[in-house]
Image (cartoon, rainbow, N blue to C red):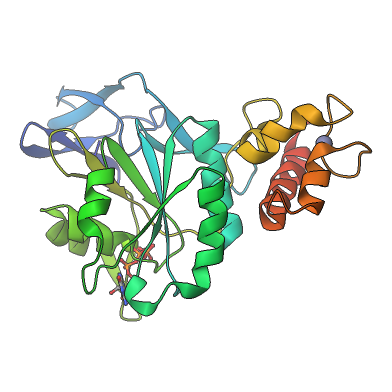
Length: 286
Ligand SMILES: Nc1nc2c(ncn2[C@@H]2O[C@H](COP(=O)(O)OP(=O)(O)OP(=O)(O)O)[C@@H](O)[C@H]2O)c(=O)[nH]1
Ligand SMILES: [Mg+2]
Ligand SMILES: [Zn+2]
């Protein structure tokens, strides 16, 4: 499935793009879903029959604390940041945690390097040290895009704050994107803001998804100790804590806290972990 479209969805079928009606409210297809459709006498056009089993599903916690699907069948999160707007590193950490929890690859894409990335380099180094790949690019003038393109095997979902340049990157990388994004975006105070997720083909092996920018994001906690599993460096050290169920808050003999004090774990990553762990405690049934 390419994108949602009012009461229906856009589906690629061979070289054609079909508008399929969505019968009822039970089916909740998301960008990246593989759709089975058929001609429907009721709507006199193609209608969704079923959604094929998903290889994976990225979800977020919605305003009511429930899991809401974002995109399906993806290989990688491309977390886009830029010097303008300034990065929200807690948001970046949560996307990295989401990727970890769903066994997705993650690539940190520092865009707009023409504006200078010097102020972001210490934070990028923190990610590199925990094994998260970072790449520096610009759309205008083009810089590092061939290297980025080579890293985008399989299906990549671009995520991040509004205005960091996700759609600009898609337009620079996907041959047929420019015309389609123009139709899917609305002009708000002179800015083109993406309002709906959409999949674009890069080649027969790979695709890229553009998504609306977000202010906030949190992955649902389906696994036990989900918060720490989202942070490799914290999960690895937790085996040295005195208590098996250590939350790494105030417990004595906490190997994680000791590592934070010794600056072996970046204090901001630890703070990100704490915020996510607290959120999960608040949402857990008491
Ligand atoms: N200087 C500079 N500006 C860029 C670059 N890439 C994108 N921009 C600008 O940044 C602004 C936002 O770009 P978009 O691609 O619309 O950002 P987005 O992430 O898709 O934003 P949302 O759809 O709102 O989430 C536009 O004015 C772009 O021209 C870049 O490499 N350098
Ligand atoms: Mg956009
Ligand atoms: Zn601990």
